[in-house]
Amino acid sequence: MQNENDDKEKKEGYENCCAMCRRTESAVGKLMKLPQNIYLCEDCLQRSFDMVSATIKPEDMEKFPGNIRFVLPGDGLMQNQPQIKPKKKEAPKTSPETEPKMDISKLPAPHEIKARLDEYVVGQENAKKVISVAVYNHYKRVKNQNLPQYQDDVVIEKSNMLMIGPTGCGKTYLVQTLARLLHVPLAITDATSLTEAGYIGDDVESVLSKLLQNADNDVERAEHGIVFIDEIDKIAKKKNTNSRDVSGESVQQGLLKLLEGADVEVPVGASSKNAMVPMTTVNTKNILFICGGAFPDLDDIIKQRLTKSSTMGFNSELKDVYDKDPDILSKVTVEDLREYGMIPEFLGRLPVIFSLQGLTKESLMRILVEPKNAITRQYEKLLAMDEVRLFFEKEAIEKIAEKALKKTTGARALRSILEEFMLDIMYEIPKDSSIGTVTITADYIDGKGAPLIELRNR
Image (cartoon, rainbow, N blue to C red):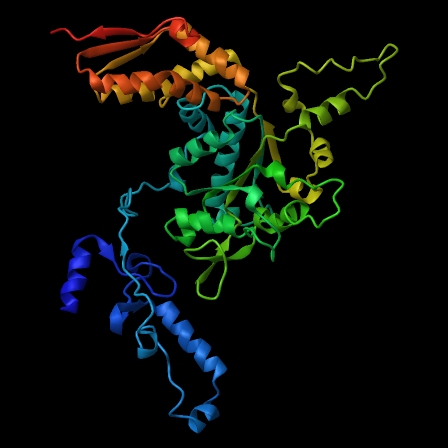
């Protein structure tokens, strides 16, 4: 009867999981079955034996042979405990065998990488050029470092990067697009959750555990991946604080060994270390680290440095000469970042520092229509599923860009604005099957009219 229940669960798409670490059979291999439908993986079973053998001496076993025994989850002492139900299998998006992987021997040239980024990312020409060259040099170094002809005294170091740019300018999207095009594992993490070791929060090693998980627990593939640490400006050294800075300068110091290259113990299948989670060693020497942040108020530090000269005399400069400079972040230096609160050792491990420009009205208009997965194309595809064609007038695109510019949140404002105006259209179209074409007009965006609707030809 029990075997019939097990077969029924497997047919319904469930798989057994370990009663202690809760990892499924597909993740750890075949589980050992105990009474009362309890399953244990080999790691947890071995750890239990090791703990018992370490705490109980052999002479004590001889003294009390009748009183000492293993208490397993399926034993009589645990009859009243809730039974662990098997977990439902999650359908993988792509199997590890069919998922495309990067071939370092066929690494595209920098101009090819940039050309492919141009298909998805609008503007930011300098940033795309810098990141294409840095990525190409990094993987060229990984490919050739073990060849005999390059075994000499010249050791090429990593080109970790620091991206600076206002919110919504495309920092995260640029890295996501790059990793997708190169088919390398990517881990995106937020620096705001990182804390010093021993305090509540994520340790710096949790960055690598996410990378290992995205690489299907393949250590060799993870060691050639990319790690993007967003909101890096949030771990700047705090000023005028009376409490211990556990999420600022101390986190920068903890990241130093990861950025430079070291063997790090990383938990497998979990984000935190504990006794029941197996550990593996990951070498960060060939992992490319990209840090990004908006660095608010950094422009004030740059302006203060640029206007240090006297305001009187022949060499004087006006204090407000850089107030309306939209590209002020491109003039950033390491000294400005040190003044902001980043420690010199951390900046020294990020040799490539570049800035992204804030988005203008023209660039917002291009973002709406030019990329392969432009927002307007996404709505066109959604309505095409209902056999309805969607069009945007050029004046409507301009009005949307103007509204987004006023929100000062970059490209993120475009989707929120379109969601607002497309709500009624998406609600009404499934009601009437006679609608064939919808055109978004400038008057509709201004609130002075309605979209143009054409019926199907009967």
